[in-house]
Length: 337
Image (cartoon, rainbow, N blue to C red; front, side):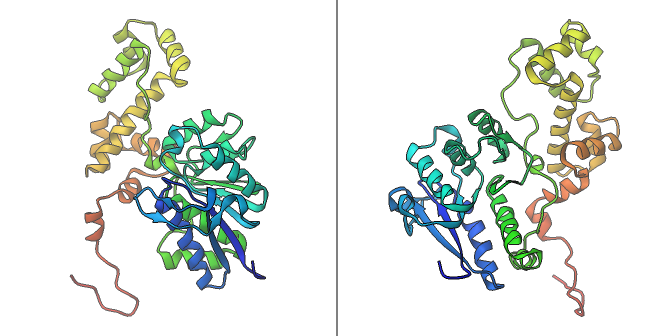
């Protein structure tokens, strides 16, 4: 690398997510417009071209096994990674590149490659919310933080799903060049410097298999069938013919929660679906079983750090968003359609 150039080595492979590459690459490229000097190098095992998740053939600059040192080593994600073991040669390439680089980072499920290479042992990390539990099982010595947009632990960075690679790259630019340059990049790309809330605003709270215990499945089905009914601990216990204490023990043993919290999560997911469908917050509270808008607001604050209204604005229909009134430019008259 020439003096002042920051080398970014990017490990690619068949099935890599295209946006995992293009998002961070655009951030680094845009930063160069404002005075940074990032140089991107794509490497693969064997130096062979790879095919991306959308079928495009991607040429590379060289073989990961022969690459020189980088200032930042970045590994991308891909859909196959959580579902099957990482290829030994890919993990070995990541380990070698990490050893020769000052800083290590992954986008989305690229964390599985770092984990297979032993680079997340004893570290905090994150990945796409849908695969966080799998990563925690795959790398039990890591402390996986499923709600984080990105996590920094020493010189190792991991990011959440797909577009969170942009957040990660902005954080790296800010670390290298300060907040002013990073802010210029964010404004130019029309993205926030730091998005509000964590990954949980994008996830399904009860994603995962149904309870195995028949009694708990009956509780789940009863709440989903009529979320506005009385689902107090006593009412649920009477419905499934066990004592309240025994029902609580069953919830803690299998689901690591209480009946009350589980009922709230079912209602919370239903409220999100109602807001997504266009109901206002008061309607969503009533139809999902919350006794009032205020109780719904508190649930949103606990689970997402957002109000129901902010959540709905963030996930409104793109058609609705495109028809919002536009603010006139300073000094200009009102904009008419």
